[in-house]
Image (tube, rainbow, N blue to C red):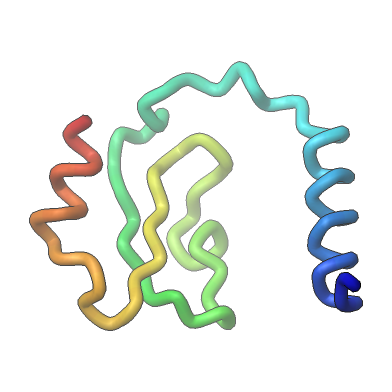
Length: 77
């Protein structure tokens, strides 16, 4: 049986997918950069760094879980 949290996440995801109208955004990101930030839930990368949907790759990091080399390899692909 699904928890209340799981039900909330699933219904929010379904609403987001149904209302999503920006599938035409270009790849790679428009501003051609990557934001590597802490996974702290209190941080909103879009507001903190002044980016909009489609502007940048955003990776939320867990205390050196990803090395910088790994991140750069992901961006290069």
